[in-house]
Length: 203
Image 1 (cartoon, rainbow, N blue to C red):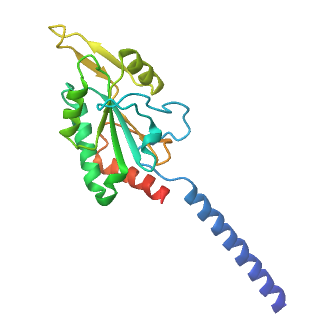
Image 2 (cartoon, rainbow, N blue to C red):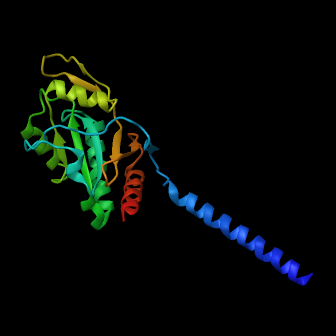
Image 3 (tube, one colour):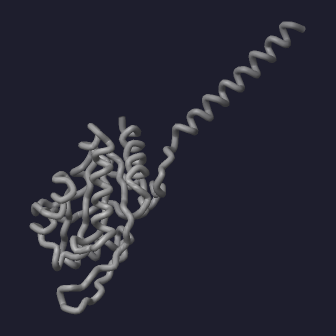
């Protein structure tokens, strides 16, 4: 009788331990993000545009880094500078891991945003930030692939127009895979948390 009870106890423990291992394995399988998890989407695969230095770029250039892509324009009065300032804050918050973060700004206003203007604009936030600028046709194609909305809004003069545009950011892991959509206004701490999660995942 004692032997039978002992065997039952061992069997029960084995089942519980096995279940614990299974649950632990499941919990480690999928990270929790503060932003929107879009790991399964089939768009925004690359950013084949030249940067403000004239170098053709692709996501594969930044392997080993978490990449954050934002679409905007230099004369944007609020959303764009706020977003880029947040990116600068995130880089500082990461400490030594800040070098493993690449911020990329894609202009939706190539007509006015010259390479020199874009380089100076990035320099206002962090010298390591890159701006990409294509032709109007290239810009439209990339924006379509990213499901980015943008539209010129006429001003009082031909050059005083503004640009309506989507305000979110796309976060890629160190392997160049799209993982998170970050809504504008979520705050630097939330973005930093997701960047840390992706960096930890890669270690």
